[in-house]
Image (tube, rainbow, N blue to C red; front, side, top):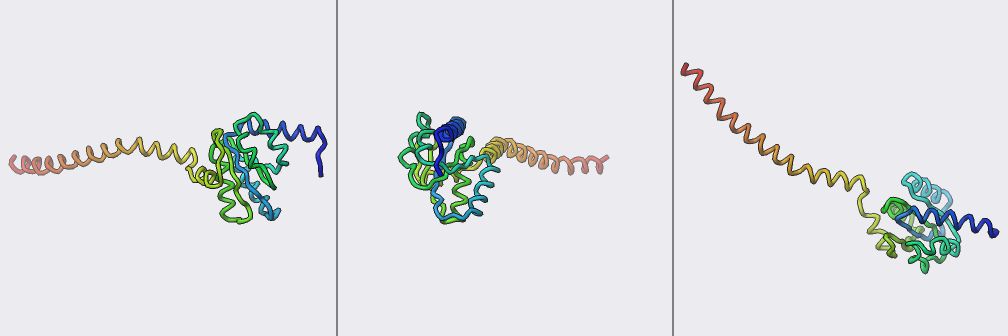
Length: 175
C-alpha cells in the first residue's frame, strides 16, 4: 500500500522528531519473523523506552538527513525495523536480546554518537550495563574505602577492648 504525499510528509516529520530526541539508532532485518514475535519485540521495546518503526527506507533516509544518524544512510536497504532510543544502550539491548532468541532477526547496524556501528558494534553497545547499574557500581566503589576504614577501626577497637577487659578484671581482684 503506497502513501500519498501528505502521509509521507507526516511519517518523515515523526521520524525526524524521534531522531532529534534519540541518542541511538539500531537497524535490524526482520524478514521471516512472525507477527506474534514482532508483537513481543514491540512490547519489550515500549517498556524500555525504545521506539520501533517499520519504515520505507527512502522515507527513513530523508528523515535522518542532516542529523547524526545520516551516517547509516547507505545501510538502509531491505526490510528493516528501526529502533530509536533516548537512552544510549536501550535500543541496542532490546534488539540484541531479541536476536539471541530469534535467529530471523538480523542486526544490520546502528548509530551512536554520530558514528556508524556494524553488527558487532551494536552487540558491544548492548553489553554495556544500564545507567542505574553503573551508578550503583560507582557508589559501591566510592563506599569501599570508607567501609574498609570502618572495619579496620572496629578491629582496632575490639583489640583494645580485649586488652582493657583483663586489666579491669585484675584491678577488681586486687582491690
